[in-house]
Image 1 (tube, helix red, strand yellow):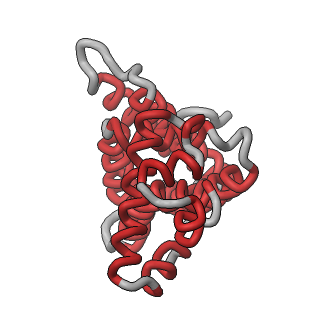
Image 2 (cartoon, one colour):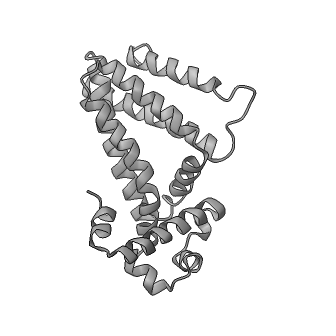
Length: 208
């Protein structure tokens, strides 16, 4: 259970409604104005409450940002854990996960939110730490699947391929989030992505 879930469990119904309204306004602000306008003062103004009242629910900007991004991240993490736990073949598990990742990269709002979140990493140490934690979990779980698909890989190679898979998905998310995923066939990159995934898993790329 996350810190946000723990807090919601302690709030009364009115408090839950206020907290949800804050998160809704913060999400809208981040999408409209980007990370530069994402301040506690502006969030409080949008939500129609005082900064002190806002800080009762979210003491810092990172706490608000975490509440906005956590539903997106947790949904992906649930799919990842479900894929790892299912009784299907490892390659099928990874294929389902990559297909879900591709679908997510086409969600304009989620992609834009992720881009704004990443833009804070360079100037906010807590945000950078949060990103590192998420990446560490993703890399570890995907590396397990990669080595299950191809037992010939060493532990280091499994982690490296997991890192490459995550980086490719991130690249597509950035293209969508910054409005660059255009062209006659917006799905053209999908086939290339999946073919590259297959080559990586079969050991055809990057191994001497």
